[in-house]
Structures are given as C-alpha cells and as structure tokens.
Amino acid sequence: MHGILLLTRAEISRLRRNKRYLLFTVGLPVILYLIVGKQAARVYGVSFTAYYMVAMATFGAFSGALNGNAIRISEERKVGWIRQLRLTPLPANGYVVAKILTSMVTTILSVVIVLLLGRFYGGVHLDGWKWVVIAIVVWLGSTIFAALAVAIGYRFPPDQVQPITILVYFVFLALGGVWFPLSGALKTLGQGTPTYEAVKISTDVIGGISVPVGLPIGLVVWLAIFVGLAILSVRSMAESL
Image (tube, rainbow, N blue to C red):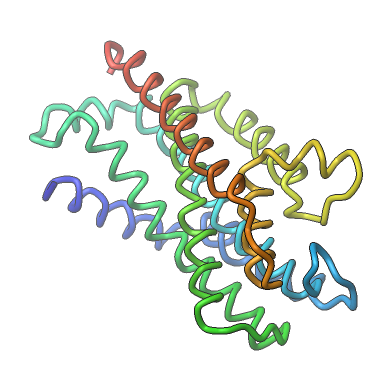
C-alpha cells in the first residue's frame, strides 16, 4: 500500500504541472459556466444556473478521469514504464489503483471550483448537506470513467486512444445532458448513461425531489462494467508488459 501511495503522490505532482489537463478539467468548465450559466429557465425541475453548475462539475470531473488518464496509460505502456514498475515491489494491480486514486484526488479541484462558482456567481442557494451530496455524487461518479480510462489505455496504442476516448466521451456528454438538457426521444435514449444519472441525481437533490433508486444503482452498474473491462484489459495485455 505504501508503494501505491508513493506512486499516487508522484502522479498528482506531475498532473499539477500539466497545463492541458488543468485547462480541460478546470478552465473549460469554468469558462462555459461564465458564458452560458446565467439563463432564466428551469431544467429538470431546477433553475438553469443550478442545472448547469452540476453539468459543468460533471464535465470537468469526468473529462479529467477519462481523457487524461487513458492517453497517459497508453503512452506509459508503450515506452515500458509499466514494465519497469512490474520489477518493483509494487503489487501487480498497484499501477491501476494509483491511477484511479490520482483521478479521485485531482477531480476534487474541478468539482469544488465549479460549485463555488455556482454559489457566488450563479446565485445558487442550497442547504449545506445538498452541496455535500452533489459533490460526492459527481466525485464518485468520475471513478466510472477512471476505470474506463484504464480499460482503453491498456488495450489500445497511443495513436488510437485519443480518437477513441474523444468519441466515447462526446457520446456520453451528448446523451447525458451535460452540454444541454435533454427532452423527448433523446432524453429517453440518454437516461441510461452514467453522465445523465449523475446530473439527474444532483438536480433531484437540488429540487428536493425523491431520487429514484434506479439512478444510483445505475451508477454502480456502470462502475462494475468498466472495472470489469479494465481488469480484462490488464490481464489480456499482461504478457506484453
């Protein structure tokens, strides 16, 4: 466990110097909220400012978990870094665990900043416990895409990882109601995505609506699926490492 924590700390230090990572996980959600966030409308039973606050927090956290991790994992596997780590006392799954822990730590910043922006710029007023629940839902939801990043990063070479992650993520963003609220057939189609489930749980909490039990269950199911895919990818590529 000590080795995993040391690797996690090293990963976090490296990400802090990655300007591209900070731009997409923190900068872009903040910019979009400043431009689009203040609209006089109601979405999913709450004000647009509250909905878009949740959407941008989800955007930043999930983007950091998937896009940054998948590409780095693929590149590190290609250059032999993972093979070198296998020669250390680090447990066989230590690299994967460190990546997920790193993602959980680094996505906190994006979630907190966007929620603070919603409170002091968007004028969103909530009970204290609701802020905590929303932050936890978005934060833990990002682990779903951290697991998917491991699955993709281990499976594909760097030149294929970027277009694959962009395509997958754009589909989840569009169908999850992150860029814009869903309605009609598109809403029906997107209701089963983890992005929609994270946003809808949060807006239901904001609106004081009872959260359907299927939404948190759905997030757990998605996490189990992507963790399973990550395990399969790691095991299938183990011989080449």
